[in-house]
Amino acid sequence: MIAPADVGTVDTTQLLGLTSPAARVVMWLFVFSNFLYAFATIDEVKHPEPVLLAVLIVNSAVILLVREHADPFPMLWTIAVLAAVALSTVLVAFQLPDVGPPGRASWHLGSNAWMLFFLAMRRRPGAAWVGYGIMATITVTWSLSAGRGVVDAVFLLDTHAAILFVATLFALNLRRTARGINEFDRRAVSSAIEAAEGATSAQIRKRRVVELRASAAHLLEALVNDGPPIDSHTRTRYATAEALLRDGVRGRSLMSPRIAAAATAARERGVEVTLLDDRGQGLATGDAMVRLSEIVVEQLDALSGGSVTVRLAPKGRRIAVSIVASDGAVHPRIELDGGGHQLVDKEG
Image (cartoon, rainbow, N blue to C red; front, side, top):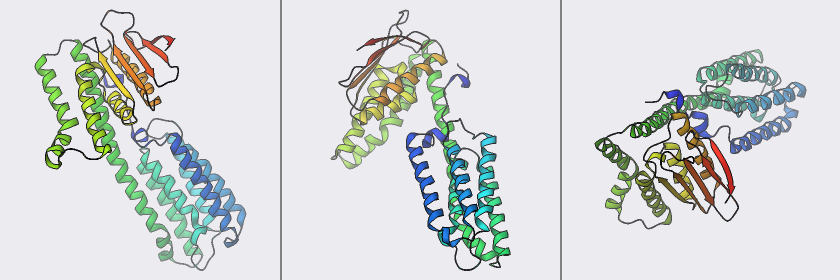
């Protein structure tokens, strides 16, 4: 049995793709919208300079939130985000008009609320609520000093509290999901090691029954209840489920959750995936299996068509794993040793 530290883990940031290229596109849209609202309402504030400084502070802070780092979000970066929330609120709030609805001139409240939303997503919900408390305190102070009263401040803040509340619940549920995935991954790698140590056929059959129920039971029930699938999307789901079951027989030791998920996603893109286990067991260590999984997933994710074959060679050979991809372009043949380290690249 391997230690949990030997197995790659996922967190909420990975589940949501908060550091992905798509997230960076959203970030730049966020930056643009902040500039847009600030300049569009520049005539409505008392002095524009503090507002423009606030835009720069908020946009600098949001860049931190999409930087690569394992969760929880680093404390120093968290403090920087909270400081940005506090400073931007002070800079903008006291430049808002004393009478009438502030409208889009109070753009900083929405921007800060969404920053706190993603701070909560990155396993800092407590800090996010501290940030909201700071923002609320400053807003109420401004509202009282402007003669607006507490009620006006509450109306400005209530929807943002709801957003942060949803973020908190969502983050807690995602953490449970991530823990479940990590536990499943640990069990899968442990199962590969147990198979190498001679797990009994009864244990293997029992595990396969559980996997069958997890991957195909709901589809079989739908087939019984609703009849044969009539649309291409549903047929694709059945085909990928069938392929996953086939992998469990032909490529047993390769069936970690990450590889299974990547293979399913590749098949949905039209890639022909073949997993072959001629070894009858995984690689020697948990670290080797993790390295193998990372390389296989990378190859599967890179293809949008064609085919890829991953083969575990019989034990004792210098080349323990071979990965061959083909989609009309030239791809290197990847070969790994028993430790999961790459040996050579040959033009395929």
